[in-house]
Image (cartoon, helix red, strand yellow):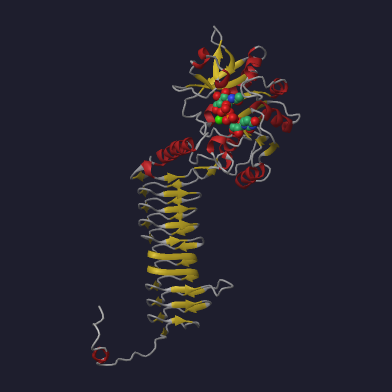
Length: 481
Ligand code: UD1
Ligand code: CA
């Protein structure tokens, strides 16, 4: 298996004389959603991107997506993920069927000749190997290659009709099938490869005389059977799974996730492989240990021997070798140095950079903050827009007051400084090297290297106070203490 299962932002390097059409114009009625089915995330990636990633892996160019429902939003998602112009869009304003969609897609291919691969936007688990085999088979014979599968429950799928010699004669949609045909368990996966010229010809002459009043792409199969010929590639039921409703969406997500985890499990330990979410873009180094209910998203990397305890949620976060993340650490766009120790219940927000051997403890929140080697903030602290040197100790309850209601301002704490508990650092402010800030201070000016800063009001003790107050309220019940 490749190190990264999805190739993101891939660009076609060398062409493969292969064009790809992705049919993705449907609303996805069975999702019962305000959002187009193609935009629903499957393991962090919009559904429509899966066939695009496959097409890029096969070095197909051009790649045309036929879009209709929420076209603008789907197009935006495609540019965001694959780069502007990677995918050409053909609009199908009204969804008149898969055959109509291909006709419009071909129009966007203009004079293009060669093999065309047709993928459905809602079939995300196809492997590169299966698609390569399909393209090869079409190309080698100059025929229409279709993908079929044997299903225990073929309900809803188009059935593959074969003649007495076993050759494919056509596909009949479930809604149009006779009782005899409904008993056929070999189904059409809806993925094809064919010469462009044949597709142009065949889709130009489709008619909507069927149960759904649509232009069926599947009608080209019978046409090919009596002209250029049909070859088939069989695929297993899991690979051809289509996503039509939310139940299928999460079922496929589980399969994808389990594949990814299975890959990393060869050299890392997952305490409960079925209770984690690991996106395809994550990398996990040797001897890492991943606890239960951990979620690893985006460009997250887990370094060698690092331990990610139960319930941690990491997004675009780099964890150094040997680091330990105690339970329920949440980190986004953060980097954690080697052998650092974080959590439990720490919140590392974007721009957090923890150096080697740093300790960040419970209920500590950081944002745009760097802590140098060996520095510690162990309890109940907010550090925002802060640069902290090496060997600094930040006491419990320290707060950087980085925002004055208009702008964010910076705090600098230099090497070896000691910040006492319950300190407020009112930014912009700098605490010098080895300076000591006494507990409970409000620091509003720069502190010189090696100095003690203390902002305490003098302590006063008044003897006998409790008795005097008690006497004043002698005829009332004593306060509960
Ligand atoms: C289709 C096949 C069926 C096959 C099944 C496999 C046809 C007529 N039937 O049925 O034989 O067993 O897939 O999953 O092709 N789309 C458009 N424009 C349209 C209609 C559909 O872009 O006008 C897109 C949809 O967004 C979707 C894909 O084409 O991504 C498939 O359409 P769908 O309606 O789901 O086809 P099925 O009924 O599943
Ligand atoms: Ca479908």
